[in-house]
Length: 115
Image 1 (cartoon, rainbow, N blue to C red):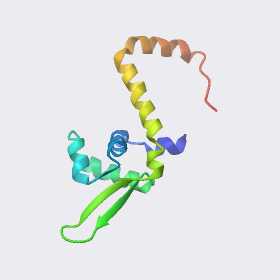
Image 2 (tube, rainbow, N blue to C red):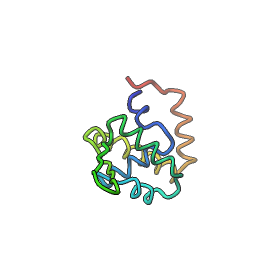
Image 3 (cartoon, rainbow, N blue to C red):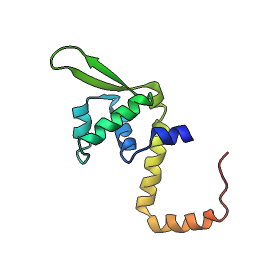
Image 4 (tube, helix red, strand yellow):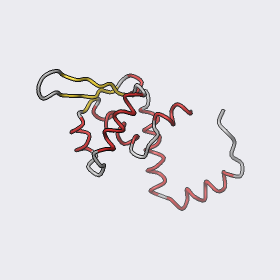
């Protein structure tokens, strides 16, 4: 679990990964256009983070101007069920936050750690 959390660390990392799961590949410009609320630094940092984690690969095409395209790896594709579960959980919480809060309070007294 620690490796998964470290890979998805950062406020915008799951959203960047979601875009790669949708597209399979993207340039910096395409990613920035898909996530317009992010500052210029955030996509750059998240691309470096996900590349370092082996989730995406960086491909540079020689020439002028140089073109860089990022592609999702098999390890990145394997994170799809995790990202999908996060989305579903968040969607359910958004649709009924009061019921979910009450349900959590009831379960928290008997919660056990996943092994």
